[in-house]
Image (cartoon, rainbow, N blue to C red; front, side, top):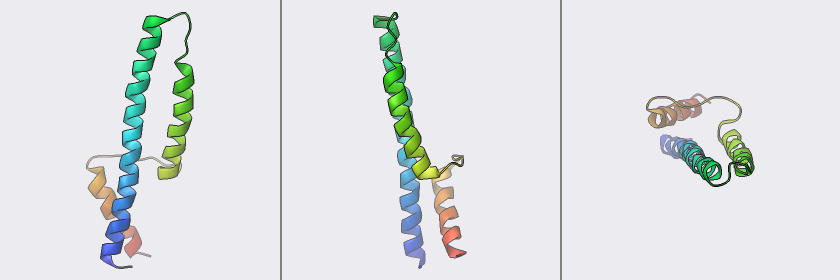
Length: 92
């Protein structure tokens, strides 16, 4: 595999990771809004758990599909991940 192909694969992988981070951020903000709406309009009927749980399962599946069961993130992670993936491919 040449350097250009490794770079394309690494860039694709980083794009997948970035997609998950965007998904997680939207999940937090939308569900915070749903909780606020629920507690403000009908605090006696707590329905926000349903979208929180349903979407949470989807988010967890997305995270596992991208990262497996390990951890992620760090400073300047996008460029670091591209370099890390390229080095991994070079060593194989």
